[in-house]
Length: 70
Image 1: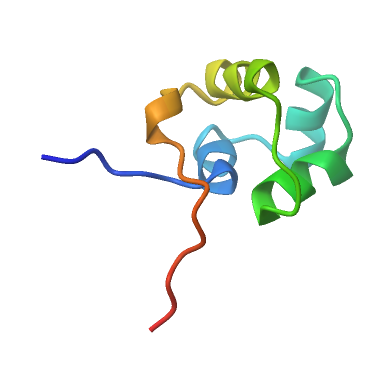
Image 2: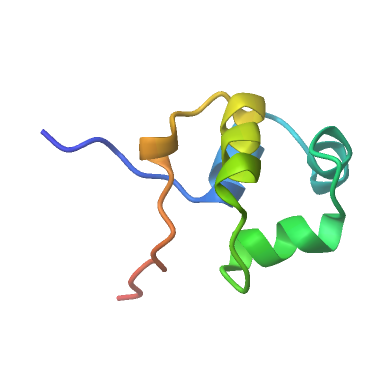
């Protein structure tokens, strides 16, 4: 059985964090997080691990693939 994958934005929202709160906790900018969430740029492995700790999700749970539209 495969594990459900969620986006970075969903992980942040599920953690009840605003972009501003997450950016401050991760020592980055709001725009950087927006770029990560949109897939415009990608976080380093170290930053991604920080995000997973903050959002309380496993690295394996994050999906970087765009959602298919029907």
